[in-house]
Length: 73
Image (cartoon, rainbow, N blue to C red; front, side):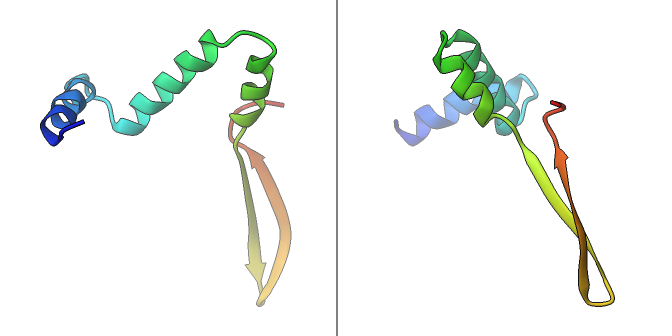
């Protein structure tokens, strides 16, 4: 793809007021929705996002907290 073609293609998501990350996430969601079983279940497991954090007190690490950012249980 030439640089001019890439610039023109990016203009569509920019014109819609989206960031590239929003555009990529929307496209990924559409692809996940179009996939048939049994592959869909495997893809669903990979979209989970977890965040691990811990506080430091007195130079020592306290208990770690794992947060599920996907809203799942």
